[in-house]
Length: 469
Image (cartoon, rainbow, N blue to C red):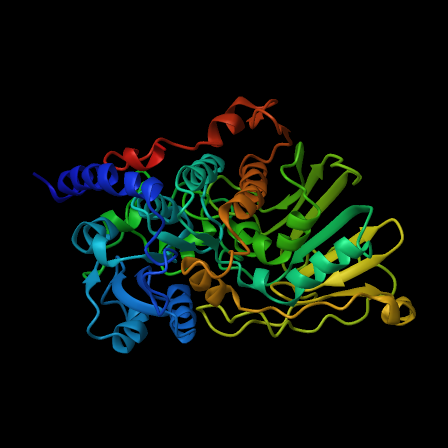
């Protein structure tokens, strides 16, 4: 019997026992049996994964019990391996769960976008709490299934890794919305004009890159996860996966959850009924455009008016700037990418929020909003409500929630609809067509190809079981 067959059989067996237990009894941590540390397994330990593990460990609330990475001996994994030299190591998360399932209480998942879904689904079905990097899934359907799983396993704590959602802007936006400072919003501009890895590539590419020799350290089959067979190429791995429609979600999937998260949650935007590619420079079938302008139209909600969100990416694709905007400085909350320090941009990542009476500007991640122009902000300063400080950062918030002490601020019921906005935006980029979306049936009504791509290609043989809830 192959390793994959064994893992699949073991998966089914474990689900029969452990998923039932998730309904019968609370998680052992929230039951009060232990409140010291959470036994944490880490899937994806290099690059951004290393940063997440470091931050979770820094809280003092995580006991790292397993490390999993498909390229365990690569240079970018060495930092974590050296930090935790005696922790068991795995290349296959399924083997890790088979052998250590009873010792694992939570997992961090920081793999490439296309590999988030299967690991998350298996972990949840086994009753493990999950911290998953953004975006949660590469397709609309993957996100839909993650939300169904979260509802099926209500004892499982979920948190998407958009870390700014536990910082100042989260509490400020919530407070200002409740106090009526932010009201009657009709338009939002979101912008991310930093250089991207695919900028400068040949947009006339006729096929995917040619096959190259697989590095000795890399389990390419496991790296592919549920995605169909692709030949190895260096331009797929180590962050390059974000460039390709087959594996990543481009600038929108990367930055959208750091820029639009609070507006999406507290303005209760939900899903758009229309997504239009206004401008796509360098459009091609394989990787993301050199610059994109996308329009998302959201209907009226409760007592709130309809909203148009416009997304701008590309170095020179700057949005209109309102009078009195002021200076945009580099945001200190933005972590440096794995390729090095952030490069200064002509306009640094952020948003402009237009309401009936006020205009706000803000950066990305946890950056606070500012009323503009400055004279208006000074006039209103004395009357603004006090904003509470965050009791915990995003990593501590997750671990505290695993212990039953807090609720996560970016659980799947909040994070999934946000990610699905980006899923729809990426489809509009990929096909270069406007999309009419039925927010009740979750179907694209004007384009059969786009509607089929909500689910995307069928999972690779041996990975089908993760697509069932």
